[in-house]
Length: 219
Image (cartoon, rainbow, N blue to C red; front, side, top):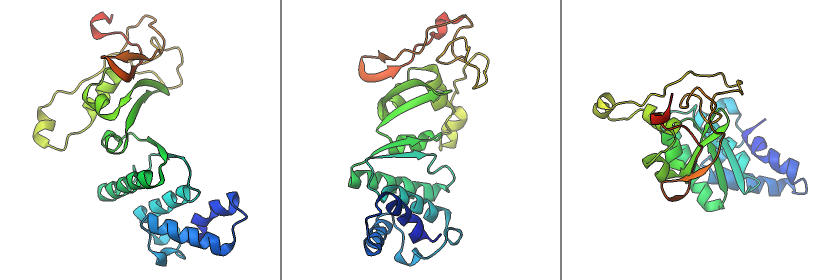
């Protein structure tokens, strides 16, 4: 399947009433919007670079003008320079098309760059949720603090001199449901603790944290 046919496929499935000329017009417009040259329309995926193929995927997702787009590790396989270009493109499309975006990533720097609000998950459970700058500047949950502590710092002097936060406790398998504390077994006491319960922290509206045992109370 050529690049043009691939981008047009959602239109064929969900808008079969469109004529070929109308589909071609929409495909050409979307290719221009995501930064793909018109000459690429008859190329095949193996003839494109990783960044170009990612733009094709974005064009396919945007061609139907959705209100919500889910990006699951959308830039994790790309080089750093190309990754920055794709992030800028997603931010631009979000503004131009007025769409909402759920961006799933393990890269904390990328999340901070593209997100407005951040949700931290552990084994499928929400640990903390807050506005981007609030969460990065004032994390409350031990797991969030550990994640931010584990993220590398580009400055080698700061990276070597800083003290990393390490969680205590035993790591449990993801399929183990009977964890001592439902929110985060690494950070909680060995006796049954409270269940997952979002609560406001620090007087900041909208900053929600699952319940956990403070270090001073840990057994």
